Length: 225
Ligand SMILES: Nc1ncnc2c1ncn2[C@@H]1O[C@H](COP(=O)(O)OP(=O)(O)OP(=O)(O)O)[C@@H](O)[C@H]1O
Ligand SMILES: [Mg+2]
Image (spheres, helix red, strand yellow):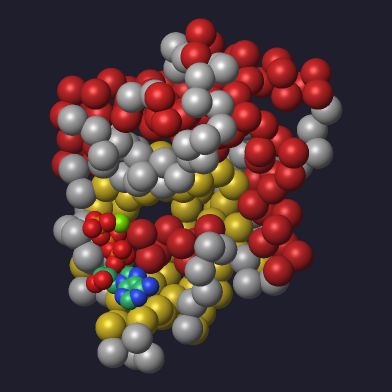
């Protein structure tokens, strides 16, 4: 049993550039995230928030440095696969759902990768979609859903396999102010209920205020806000 204040994500001296070094983005980042924290990564557009989330979640590889999540090494393919299947959820700015599939089918995909039982999957889909007010839309194709409904579906998908950590990249970035606030509120309540550690990339101060802690991303570095 882990202590609630245990470090759950640790990055050491991370560096990342694009275009053969011509676009330096992350330049020597160290950070530690404790279990149960809701942490904001705040910075202007282009400051490197998405890049950092990708490095921390194993979606991209650093040029230098290391990331450990739940004591596993993200750059090990085996550990990374295990983390992504069972321990990590990711919410993308533009949801990245499959538009031709129904809401329910989209939620079944991560469960398939984790080889969950049919009964468990059904119960989890009901529980999550009820929590976000979408239980009546299960058989609708994602392309017929509104922007807010799609983002709520993406939140459910990220939570399907009961991850310990969610990486949320501007999860309400594509929504209008009011819908964005409502979806964010729902997201915060749900992750608190499920005791999920959250790393939230946002450029909006109002969402930063709702987090326990915030890190500012600028000039390739990260500083406590
Ligand atoms: N694959 C890539 N190839 C080249 N440049 C890239 C690539 N990915 C990101 N960049 C550049 O790295 C910088 C940081 O991008 P990143 O997407 O991490 O910023 P961000 O803080 O998430 O911005 P936003 O708030 O607009 O989402 C930008 O200048 C971007 O153009
Ligand atoms: Mg981004």
